[in-house]
Amino acid sequence: MLTGRNPRSSAWPPRPHDPAPTPPPSGPSGTLDPSFDGDGIVVTNFDGGNTEASAVQQQPDGKVVAVGTMFAVGIDFKTVVARYNSNGSLDPSFGSAGTAVLNLISSSSANPSGYEIYSAIALQKDGKILVGGGTSGLTPLMARLTPTGALDPTFGNGGVVIVPELTVGG
Image (cartoon, rainbow, N blue to C red; front, side, top):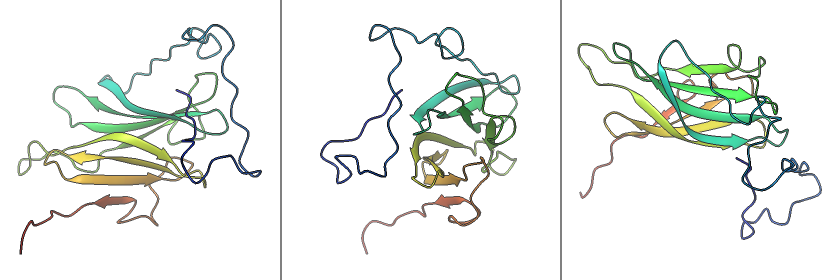
């Protein structure tokens, strides 16, 4: 879950104003860290649906941001972004009690299989969170959330960018 810098990137070595990296957990490499949710594993249930995380990033302050998809029979696929404190508890200052649910493309009678799935996450230096993925029609899309978990209205159309279909050839 810890992320490092690519030594070939222009941001290497760390600049003096970069925050200090979070130290790795103590204990042998490859073992669960009991300081994270008591046993090193956190499970979060959302509205009774099945949820799976697609991407996880650790913020410089040690908090962990995860993006995944919630699905259940009879409901739309919904994207869930959750932020956890360094001890594994949900961060109540993010979204609604630690989670933000994105349901930007919903199914309807005209579009019975319409949904979005986000499978990538990136953290900006200003604390904003980018999540990327695609629609059920394989159209790429991206959303940006503020540090508090709301869609960023200064990004794209209300916080979302959907890449228009590209035409190949003249």
